Length: 466
Image (cartoon, helix red, strand yellow):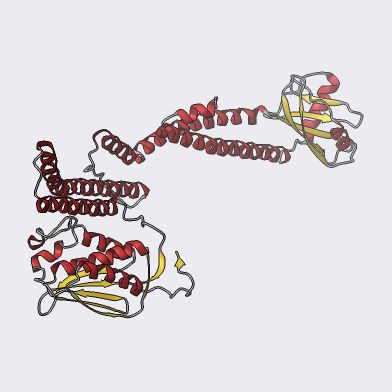
């Protein structure tokens, strides 16, 4: 696109605002000036006509004009009027330098057909004249025309036009300057925001904050920008902590794997076979470390996913059925433990696979901390699931950290696990609209309490996908 529109769009925003302001003021001023000029002209014409209608010439002067016409002697004028006597035959006697052409309307007045008439014409010198012709009272067949030049009005209108043009020009220039000032003042916060964005883009410094003043749209934009940079800074810090913690957790199983594999490789290279029991122990250790690595990678993938994104579509699922499947897996991990269960039906809206994984993590936590041949109590009633173990419990100063990523209590650092299980539990339960908490149990041990909001019971043949 070329032309004025393209040029206008290529201008900075403040220049466009100033130009639009000046244009709007120019249009308004032009409309007002034109209306003022037209109203003034109409008023002046009305006053001129009223002045002509209100003026009369006495018979003595009319006789003087008629006598001057017969003797061809000049008659002194009657300023500011030009006086002309019109006879029924069209003869006209004029007091003044320039005669006025007799119109048909003037003849009709002289012939007594109409009482008076008002019209515009030009005299013998070419001047525009406003002419009022009336029948002279008491004089049959005589009409008197009084004329005044329209230049009296035109001069005033011309002066008014130049004044309005000058005032309009000053007003437009002032409006343009005011528009530029307003644009600069109004866009100053936008300039600060632009500078902040460019600074963040160039330096990746997410600590930049823009001062927020007032409650207008610019303030809302600044507040939104500050919230965005704060969220990005928090996300980046979490990402950095996740990478650092993951590297720390991966280092131990990888070191153990490398040591065991080095021992096996050295045995094959030197030709000195390891005793069968030692070899089986090394292979079992390698397998256990690989299992731990696989579990850790799966947990990291789960936590790396954005919290607003669920792993699958939400469905109305039976919590009690998924809990039974999780209990079957927990029994395999703690075959020497006793499980006391009391499960009432309850339906929730969640992603089935993620929910089962969270329940397995809760039960696995109870299995790890239960004493040999201990008991794990599992209750589900009205959407509240409690899992209690009879282990050593959790110290009060450790409770605020149990759902942190990679956090492990000192007593649990020697046990298998990555410290991500309860973080995944908290996240999954939160996505289902529920809450989770760990509290010390009366008589020792820990109680994990998960509360889920209920969902309508789906038809028996299919779940209700959301």
